[in-house]
Image 1 (tube, rainbow, N blue to C red):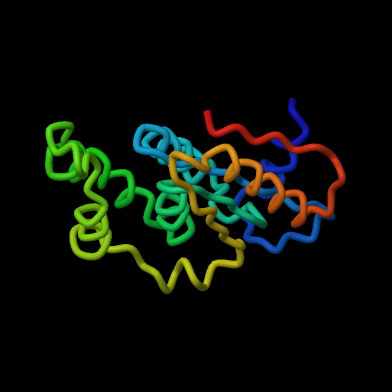
Image 2: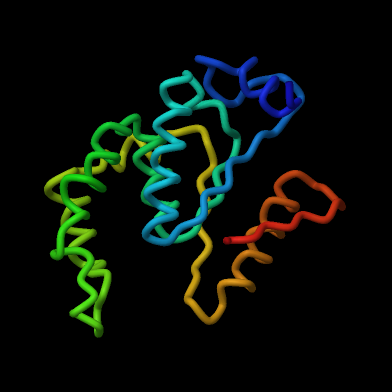
Length: 164
């Protein structure tokens, strides 16, 4: 079995900080469809009892929202937002070329329809970080995320995080 998986499974149903001599990070990229897949992966991690097993979570874009629902223990609610609220034209509309993905609508969903328990996110022992991106600086943001991970772990090894 892959060593990281072994270390994660050893943390099953435990909450960080775990005194096992390791620091384990989860990296979540964003983007509309990447966010959907990321949410699915987080649902699986929660079902495996690994929701509080990560020392750090590094995110971009929708990865931050997904991680917030993950850390708050609201995965069912967060996942439901994708298929109940974000699948119609209120959020994504190719004919609305000036605003294809309506972020204001998304924020309204998080605040009112699928309310995120912000206090639970803030009280989590997992350190949550977010990297800002735009289409023009995506490669630079991936390099920045790699630097954040390296600094957290004190590693001199090359870390190559690709957002695609």
